[in-house]
Amino acid sequence: MSEIRKMPREEGIDHSLSFIREGYRYILNRRQGFNSNVFETRLLGKKAICMVGMEATEIFYDPEKFKRKSAAPNRAVQTLFGKNGVQALDGQDHKHRKEMFMSIMTTQGIRKLTNITKIQWMTALNKWERKDKITLYEEVKEIMCRTACQWAGVPIEDADVKKMTKDLAAMFETPAAIGLNHWLGRHARNNVEKWIVELINKVRNGKINPPEDTALHVFTWHKDLEGKLLDINTAAVEVINILRPIVANAIFINFIALALHHYPEERKKLQSCDKKYFHMFIQEVRRFFPFFPCVAALVKTDFVWKGYEFKKDTLTLLDLYGTNHDPEVWESPDLFNPMRFARWEGSPFSFIPQGGGDQFMGHRCAGEWVTIEVMKVSLDYLVNQMKYEVPDQDLSYSLVSMPSIPKSKVVIKNVKPKLTTDS
Ligand code: HEM
Image 1 (cartoon, protein in one colour):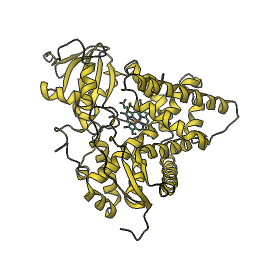
Image 2 (cartoon, helix red, strand yellow):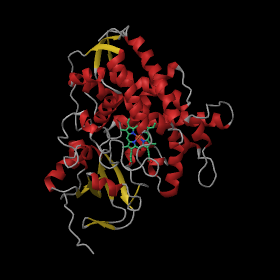
Image 3 (cartoon, protein in one colour):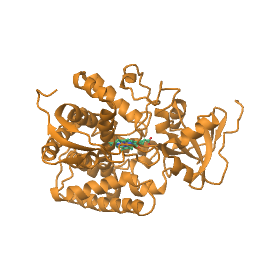
């Protein structure tokens, strides 16, 4: 048997405040201090293990070692996730629910989504032409809300789009917020859940009939392992697990615009490149910029890894941002360089902006392909389909506030469609 070692430990009663103060770099900072990819601390009044890097990711996604039930902090459940969603399931229940999600992520389904996204960008572009300037983040959230509703089969009146966009965005903008903002996020979730519950009721009563390939249809009629329909609140939480993250794509799309501004040579390359470079650019945006800081699980049964004891039920955090910036995996991780993906071997444990491991069997994001394709459509618009100027503004983004959004939310002006003769 291998020798048991003492896990590096951050002394003190609780470090939740440091986590809030240091944000995306909390785990990386201590990793450097301890010179270890794993250490123990105390967060939210509990002992917690923090891990970073490729080997840590591989172990974290081993379902024999970690479970998700009751792992997420309550503030994230009340805003971001909702109750009884796929994120908190384990074993066969998780596998069965995840199949429901993956059944709509087909090539055909994603093609339909990208077509809707293109039309929404085109419509927005016509509208922006008549304005002096726009705030890209706010506008793209609305594009994504319209796209998400249409793709998911959720009928929405034009007049309700702004409110729905605001509520869906509040769910991912407020989990780490303090005070009133956080409560606005909870309130937003309650509003949207109530609305989706009513819609599911109407589908079950035959009053509306969304297309068969949509999330609203599939999730309304999905049966659990006992052959029963999902209870209506859970079905609503899962429909929102489609709508909310599609709107959250606005964060990555805003970072695309920021990258195009900071690295103008990239814009030139993208204008003349093949599809492969487009893909590499998107991957680098997802690696380089901060989004989800980490994911949480509980130790399922006692085990020893690298000589360190992991005790049943210990909260464990895997650092997503840190792993994507791990110098053991990524050469010059703090340089924005899409070319690194030309040589990338594609381990599911080293590049984890949307979680690691396997989409079908584990908790890796169900919408990763959706995100990539929606980002490609958006990149094409920003590079090839429109012209715009970026006026002076504060484009800095913080590695402390979560999620991180450039301060000005990227204001652009003189937006015009690009004619094919424009360079
Ligand atoms: C906006 C970009 C997105 C980011 C940064 C993101 C990130 C993540 C992360 C970090 C996880 C957790 C992985 C884990 O627990 O191990 C996750 C899970 C999930 N994501 Fe995404 N996601 C995004 C977009 C999407 C989209 C567009 C959809 C759906 C259309 C989606 C649906 C889901 C679902 C259903 C889960 C739960 C999977 C499970 O627990 O098995 N996400 N995502």
